[in-house]
Length: 460
Ligand SMILES: Cc1cc2nc3c(=O)[nH]c(=O)nc-3n(C[C@H](O)[C@H](O)[C@H](O)COP(=O)(O)OP(=O)(O)OC[C@H]3O[C@@H](n4cnc5c(N)ncnc54)[C@H](O)[C@@H]3O)c2cc1C
Image (tube, rainbow, N blue to C red; front, side, top):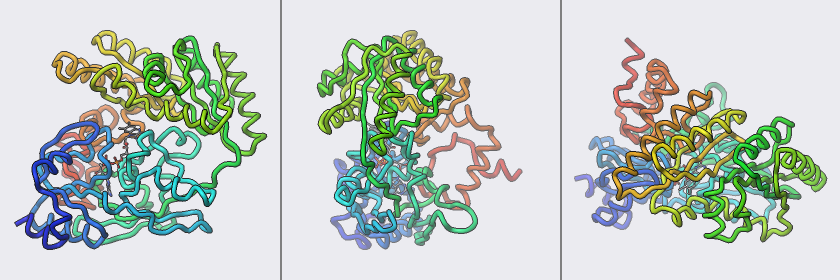
């Protein structure tokens, strides 16, 4: 019945049901779930609406999916259901340079937007390290960040308006300049649980006239962390301020020969943009602070190729660690910048105690850490050790005044961790919001909330 109705609405070519196809959509970059009942590849909002109506009639869960690069299991089916893949809704729909905005379909790959409009002198700022693969719809689903969000803000700061399909299959729109509640901000980061994005107007920024990228090498992770606090404390806001520890630097260098010093205990990658004089003054000011905190090297990228190579190394770090271990588990916690040294020490201590190799590559300027816990999933001891280490990292981040996710979202990975940050009453209040949008819990069910949390607790 389900397959017949989907095929009737979308055509046979848009409905995938073979075991091989279903297997490809049963996992994302975090976890493996169960096989969905069907995968559909709509080409329009009208087709998405038709799919939602069919799912609602038959009580099938709906899981929206971009590229499946999510690191918290957000796009993973948990009890069959229909996976809505946006691979065929990947167009740049309208370009309105006069008003510095573009309308995009959800399946447009993040980097392709900036590449396609480069000749206009504009770009799209949110740049998750996955931007070569992840989609703008998925970025909206998770409120993705990225290295340049230190200066430009995360996805929510760049979405101007949304076209969505609700749980009844009806289309609605929101815009940041609507009066009343800011629904756009609520929907960004809702992980496909409040509605399905079918198009979005996003903000475009002017490409800066000058950009400088520098690399600083440090003798210890502590001295690099202290330099980060000092740079931001001095009122300087680089466009990006990224840190890599020795494990990552060596892996990246061996994979990409990006030009990183392999003998450094920590490397900072710093970028500043603006007028040429502003970039020159940032260079001088940041170099002074880095040296005052023990930097053994301060090196500027002198060509666009060098700049790209340094960034390729940073953005390819997760792939490079495949040279060290067959699997990695990325944690994503945020702490106040001044607590970075304590947080890094806690990560190191937990990894040592559990005999796990860890590599740190992260958005240091935001205090957003990404310890990559390296392991071999064929070894049950290592799997258990990685899970335990991850739990310790989450708990310590909260103790240090931070939070359990900086940008990757909650999905299934951090459902239980939500209780470390919120009281039951707070979670129940959030569940009430969900109930307003999707009372039957058809949209990406069982994500975000720990089991047992429901709106009912709020009403009693
Ligand atoms: C190597 C690597 C590096 C990464 N670096 C970063 C980083 O720097 N910053 C960062 O924030 N993340 C990063 N990520 C995580 C991931 O890339 C982001 O979460 C990204 O936003 C997911 O996009 P996607 O298209 O793959 O979405 P998916 O993984 O397919 O889906 C993500 C979530 O969005 C929902 N969703 C997808 N499409 C829609 C839609 N049309 N409507 C409603 N909901 C939808 C899904 O249901 C799911 O909950 C990284 C991941 C990897 C593997």
